[in-house]
Amino acid sequence: MINNIQELRERLFTSGIVKNEQELQGCTSEEIAYIESKYGVLPRTYREILGLLGHSAGKLVRGLEFEFYFDQLIKMNEWQQEVILESIAEGEECTRLPENAFCICALHGDPWFIIADGQDDCYVYFLDDSRTIKESSKSVMDWIEEFVEQVEYLIKRGLR
Image (tube, rainbow, N blue to C red; front, top):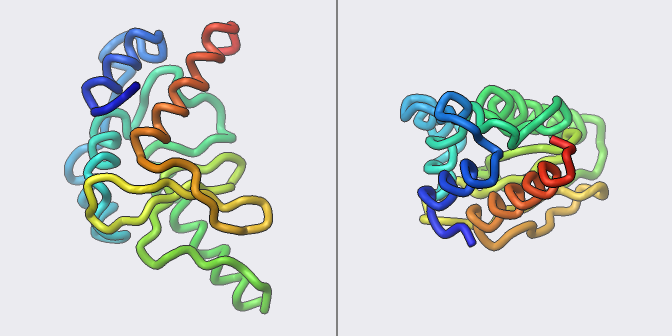
């Protein structure tokens, strides 16, 4: 079980997801402050995750179908807002994310998000195919642990 950022760091190395220090690159405090200036104060646990692996983490993310890192987060959050505004302008029914929602990743454009309200930790939500908001995990650490476990499975099977 991953309970804190140090345990996450250790797990990334012991699992083989990250092989050396060069593969693990976090966001700077300035980059995190930039996100918070646009979207609200991020939960402490997510700020720590960004500070650890916000730019790269070895085999954690592969390919372009999964958006996870800082540069992708900025584009993804802007894109999500544009999609919602366009849908509203076209008269479509759509689910509006809460004003202080921040998308932390997306698979094929479908976002997982948190609420940027400065809490210690928070739930992680996602929008399903019917654009309904659903709970994904009870905490950011639970969410990242599930993500790590999936990648460990792929590594063991030689798929990463």
